[in-house]
Length: 111
Image (tube, rainbow, N blue to C red; front, side):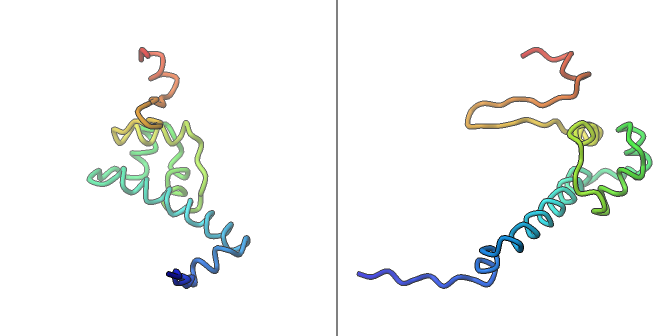
């Protein structure tokens, strides 16, 4: 039996265009960062200023992240924000779990 050729969606065709794919990937990463920050903040009514103060960052940096003006963030800044919301970061590969921590936290942990 012959298999029917699956028709490509408009999105699939567009993703074959290198320029479109690069633009899409960049915009998606920016969107994903904003969504991640929003999800971490769910149920927490901290103001931009309060979050910035607790994380040791400038309020403009927090506002620019939330608004999408900043699409890239240093790992140390991300870890500070996550810590304020009670999160830690862990790399997972199969059954291996590696915690990612700031220097201050890492010096107190044992591996």
